[in-house]
Length: 202
Image (cartoon, rainbow, N blue to C red; front, side, top):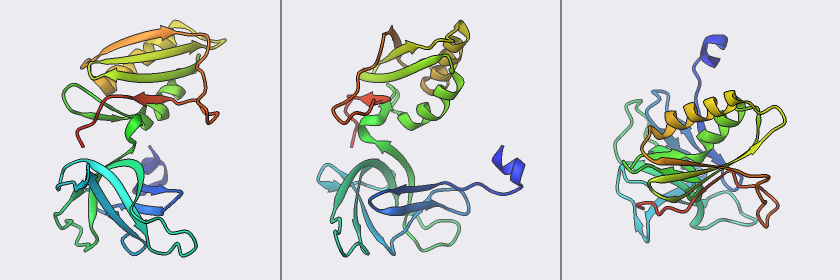
């Protein structure tokens, strides 16, 4: 929609407050080139480097933060490195995929990952009658959805919610809905939208 409206290509980037711009989508839209002029980035599977095309924990060392440098800082995000030279001709290293915090990434029984941020972006907007939502995965074959009804809640909100969940999870796991009065906040004062307690194969 944005490309059509502005008659231009849309590119995404991966960044963080601690490291600034970390990776920018390739001109061929086949991956994300790592900003290695300011970041040294690693992908770890436990204590070992992740193999190409294998998801790993992102660890970076910033090269220009002279006051308080981050050295091998594990930010809690996930990414998939690649060792193939990009078709765009760039010599920069690249990664194929990145996701938000490990605890905010859901996993389906078929092994596919569903980043929680994708749920945040669409479901809240489409289900305007729902005041609060929280997604919790404690088992690989089950997703708990806590729902706080808003003043304008209607059956249409539940229809939209079901459609969105089907789009992301494809019926691969059981959806358990719980209607609650409120969703408690964490010690930080924030409400966690997505919680995944299922171990990832890292």
